[in-house]
Image (cartoon, rainbow, N blue to C red; front, side):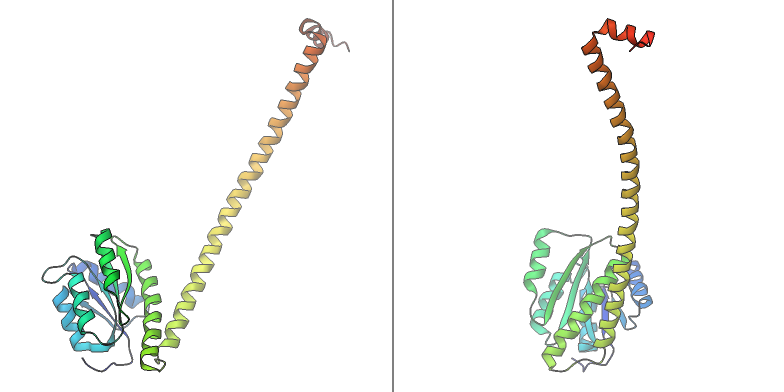
Length: 224
């Protein structure tokens, strides 16, 4: 396999061109410039053979013609010497396939995640950013050096986490406002209900104390 360049690559492997194109465009729009595509398992392995350790992460479909995702994993486990991450993205998720995928993972061929289609592209980007940081750190340990792109990856990941946290705080703030408004309305209505209950209770007690007939006569006549 060839020597690595400085730009970490992402390989999208799916037999549906529309899926490949949409993921590729979304990743490129988020700053991942070295994004490649393959239509099946054999094209995937050919791309890895050409690019070598330039490919850091593979987004891998499970069900494909010629060679499926599990077969690709099995081949890489036996042949790949550098650290490479695998994220399965499939519409055919089964418990057995997921277990097999994670069992196949090694110290160099990393079983990172098993995602179900359809999936929000933003979730894919989030997982890719996390995976790229993890892979860069693993490669740094393997080579006993810090990759030049690791600080940028960590900065991008931190910025994404800040945006995510800010968004979550805004959501929590809005939910708290709704809860407080609801509670104020609830307490207001509860106050009126309590007053009604107290008044009715006093009337019942008075009726029992004076007798119903005498109590009604006192109310009608206004006598004490």
